[in-house]
Length: 334
Image (tube, rainbow, N blue to C red; front, side, top):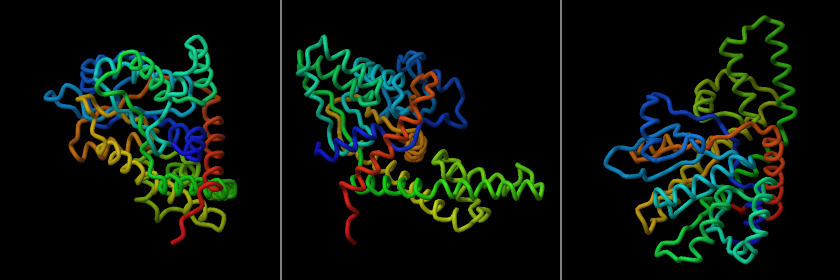
């Protein structure tokens, strides 16, 4: 991995959008429970929240793991989940956001075991080591003693140009966000003055607009925003933020498709499923693509407690990554 890629990877461990509660519409709880049992997956580790997997396959082709970035407990759960998948499902390939190449973690093999565990726990707690990386180190040490025919590997899924452009769009959203939110507040006051109900179409769309600018929309909410875009208010302070946020989401959607293409092109040397660790928006979007293409998959949401410090740390790292990329990777000339 090149130096500038490592910088971006360390600053942004696993994608753009934070953890979004995700559950599949139209699925019976029994279907999810059956998939949970077929995987032999403890419910205190992760829960199946969506599935398309028939009885003809021992394991699904894709396992999407919903990430919560920089959350220590979730990263530990993801690491345990991957190790479980390695042992129970034959997982040999894990794909992650925020990196462009296979991850080389052999430096950890040179650290004494007595020091390694404490160091890794500290790095996870500080948001410097992700769950997939943690699992890769554990499995690397195991395979080093007994080399398998098909070694465990962790791959980055990013297209560098899309990644950079998405980060630059994020910076643009930040640059316009404060004034846009002030404009939204002014519009809400106007709505209150004319006694417009909060349930009115205009007020509902305004709520979507605010979530859009805060980059908090789910895929279905973003689709609803686009369908009712004609009801979106405009102003000199609001419009630039809307354009930047729409570009951000457009690029996020493109990246979701690229992730699946990258994972499908890398053929495992075993029958194990491909595990993709991605943020909440990507999880839902990719599950929809897989369902439409009739591919087999499950979505797993790691069990997590609340962590009030998670989001500020994530936002801080995201901003640092955007700044690093803006300085280190200038836009291509067209």
